[in-house]
Length: 123
Image (cartoon, helix red, strand yellow):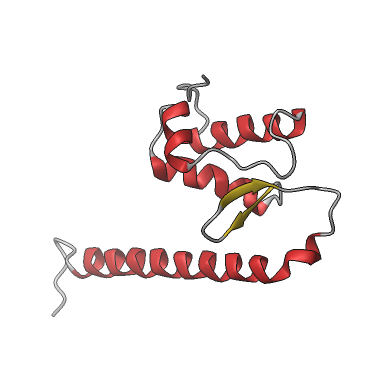
């Protein structure tokens, strides 16, 4: 189907654009599940992490909603979003946990790279 093109635009944004267009165009109707991460990766010839980032963008925009153990579904935009507050909170918590873990990895890398800077005596 669609492939990520080598434009200057990052692949995850291209995938998010395409999925968003499908949702708005109605070919992905409210309540229908998105294909799995693996299926999307194959469909767009992209890595799993790129696909996850694309789906993450759509989640942030409120176009799709993750359901623990079931998958990611196109959100019914007419439905009041407050109805599913519990899963929203769960999703936010896991996003925060994920970002915290990533941040600590970045901080570790920064700490190790700045301690060994050549040409500068630390004594």
